Image (cartoon, rainbow, N blue to C red; front, side):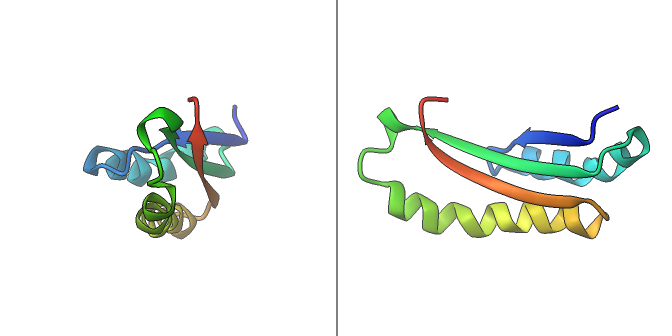
Length: 82
């Protein structure tokens, strides 16, 4: 059905639960997942370095859960207008 899926993550426990469900999507042909987190530029005013330092390890951990399920995974952390 879909080869690649983009999952929006707000790094919450609810997002972690969605990430853990991705393995079930392999049955529908899923091969790769991109985990995405976007901060609205208006709300970050100079906080980008601190947010990157905090969020990058969390996004990598979510991608690792997906890799452990046998899927390719990457993540994107963007600052801009979602």
